[in-house]
Every structure is written in structure tokens, then in C-alpha cells.
Length: 79
Image (cartoon, rainbow, N blue to C red; front, side):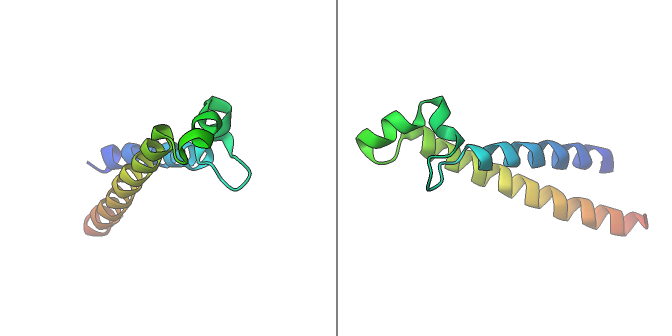
């Protein structure tokens, strides 16, 4: 169980780093490289940007839950 949660924590950590870097900041961000800049100028906020926000939130919740669960398991096991 501890190994599984450690893997989930590692994978979600890497995905969160990727998703945060893809977000459009004040200067356009890395999401502009993938076509996000063209659609945002037409409609204000693109569907891709909204989906990126959703994915970031979902993976943030999964990351938080796995970190708490891993901490509780490690405390209970005495490691």
C-alpha cells in the first residue's frame, strides 16, 4: 500500500509540475506554444485553458490526498 501511494504521489507531482508550467501567465506561458494563444484572443478563455485548470485542480486534490494518506500510513507503521 505504501509503495502504491508513493508511486501515485510521484506521478501526480510530475503531472502537477507539467500542468503548472503549461498555464498561461502574464507573458503567455508555455500554453501559447500549443495553440492556446490563438483561441484565447478570440474568445477570452479557451476550452483548452479551462480543461487545463480542471486537470490541475483534480491532480492537486489527488496529490494532497495521497500525501496525507501516505503520511498516516507511515505514522501507523512506525517507519
